[in-house]
Image 1 (cartoon, helix red, strand yellow):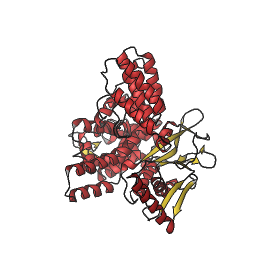
Image 2 (image 1 turned 120 degrees about the vertical axis):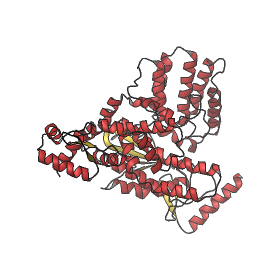
Image 3 (image 1 turned 90 degrees about the horizontal axis):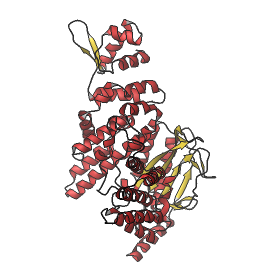
Image 4 (image 1 turned 60 degrees about the vertical axis):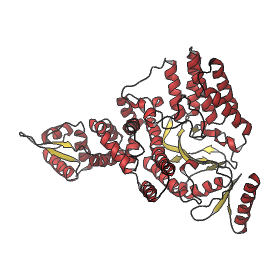
Length: 515
């Protein structure tokens, strides 16, 4: 069957209205014979079905999860090349009605998360996320679930405490949510999906993610003064038609909070600053000062964080907003203990412009790698675990693929949707082989868009950032192939023979002195 005719036939039926062969042929300007042949094949593939009527046979697309799975593969596998078909698919009645409670339950069962997503709020949040992010929908329907199957099997085989089972659940949730939230953020900035978001009535700044403000450092008080942001709460803005006025100061502040959750820190600060200059109510102003202070906390600019919290405390004369004082105390503690390795996360504010030099130097906390050759995924995979181990054997750090190390110039790495998924999977697999094992909390993978001189993001061009958080003291890490690396100011160094013994002894001695 001609692939063009096949897609035209499917797209013609996505309005969920049964149609006859004559109607389909008239709409897509093909012969009756061609349409009949096309429908026969689509019925055999369980994509379409015949609707029995007295007068004439009619056809429609099957409304089941299996059919939706096949169609997402057909229309979302190569969105850049087939932009028009993709736009029509994600704007269809079929697409919107197919992402329902049944689909959410199926996805949660597939990833063994039904017992974790217990509340209606969390499940509704997931449904809205999948509706707004075609990439996330494609991922949950087609991604390899081997790691989830293995972890679920291991958990069921353990005779262990509820706390350990809860720990397993947290790992599963993190492994599940991290990539789909990253895809949501990317999709909100993709011109291919702009029509979908126009239909939904969404703005990128209104999409926040399941990021608790406590997760990065463990005990930060939430900016909103009420605990973590659940997935349901974070995604509540994915209701159709829920736009926010640009002249409402608190709406601007909420936009800043959304950007904060998306880790777009410099944009968040701009929104908070604008809201503060417009607000008149002291308590509202105090809360925005708190949000700005939390932003500076997360990028390790402790002095500025303290200034923000102090400004908020002065406005909160009755001490009604407790997080201000708590966060100020934490900022003061971090400032007192701050060292170079504590501050290596300040770089999250960087925007990457093609051909421009990044405001960083290669040190033992930063490493730049230009990716050349025809297989960028393989190049990234081949270096991920070695540098991760090297950073783990020092004080943590960041590896940037797509920046030329000789002159710190942003080159970027060309990766389409499928390539990015492959990078996520390969890096996760490589880091999963490190010994002793590290949890998903020890690292993060970010895809930063590369912009042109006009500030527009260049399609499929990225700087990939691997963040390795500082490990516990007294541990020595090896790659899956039992190699030991340590980070140096100019790169990494592989230890062999007696060098390994000496390094282990130095770590043990240092740990003993600390104790």
